[in-house]
Image (cartoon, rainbow, N blue to C red):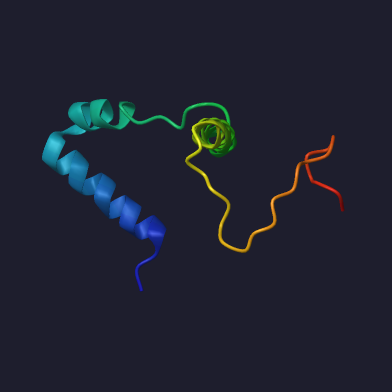
Length: 82
């Protein structure tokens, strides 16, 4: 089985052969690893967006309680009376 390292070497060689060394370098420069923690930032923004959408739907009366569900008011900590 071909290793990932070997696949990457073959791909690099193919690109250099097809593009030439200068254009290969230019091609590679368009990709960067970036900064920060994308996953944490995405989760944070996704969570905030979801909370906002749920609050808006609830305020508009679009989120009725499921049949047989018990609706409780949340306490100070936001977890109801446990």
